[in-house]
Image: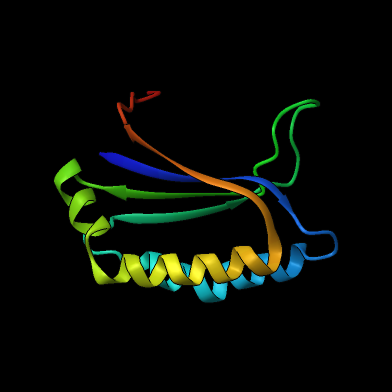
Length: 111
């Protein structure tokens, strides 16, 4: 399985945490869920971090079966729409940068 992460590094503008979270869930999550081939979409909001650690108020993780499916999702019209809405949400509520990481999962059973 392949997971593509979007790391929102920076900070939510003062007093805007609830509005930022609401906008992500209502405006962005439906678009991210519509990415073709996505198996799962996880939105994680930061509640705490180690002292001195960089601030990531939002981490998005979208699972795909393989890299070819990731590429198709990135070329899809829904991604272009998602980028436009992300820019709107970021302009209103977020100060920082967004970077992406693609990982391959190798899960081991605990039993």
